[in-house]
Length: 78
Image (cartoon, rainbow, N blue to C red):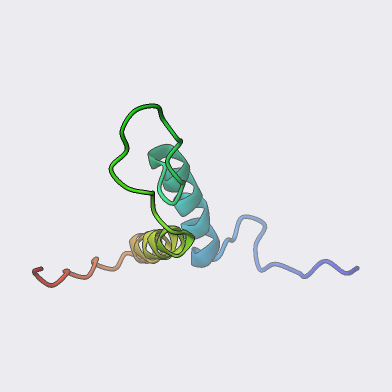
């Protein structure tokens, strides 16, 4: 297998940096992770896997914008 040549030894793409940032934030804040079952009453059955994926994709897009130095989009008033 050939190793692709990289422009600079320390050069990384914005997408790679954003992915590492997303992994750090998601791991620290528990984003996209199902809640652990607990004893007692529970309010809901938990989030569906699709909701976890949507949360992670939204977090990745926010991380990518932060790495690129773009302003985050203002969400419409709900």
